[in-house]
Image 1 (cartoon, rainbow, N blue to C red):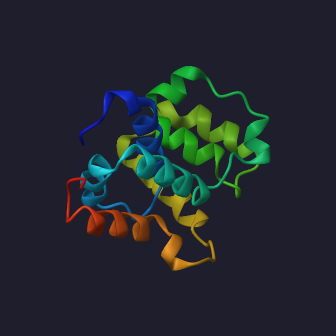
Image 2: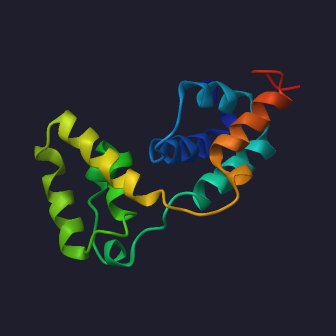
Length: 143
């Protein structure tokens, strides 16, 4: 993925939000590289809208910075999972370093699959945005 230096923080945030989505394909990253600053900001806002906020229970749990740095997508998946109570959030955060890579992958996949029961306009989904930007840029590059 190509990253514009001036937008580095936004790309980092979008990349994390993409890890939390269940339907991302490799083509999304090529299209992401082609987005203008405005499109990137719009896409970030759309991804935020399609990603659950931090749960009330998780907001009360202290997450060690080391865990956030080492397992960013998994920590975000745990703290944004409305189905987990505070005790479960603490349990999974404590278990993260002890899990195998396969167990971590299964956990994040399981958590994010449970979020995506969001009714709405299919024209406002992250996939619809990617499709529109791809078409506007003739397949890849910006106009």
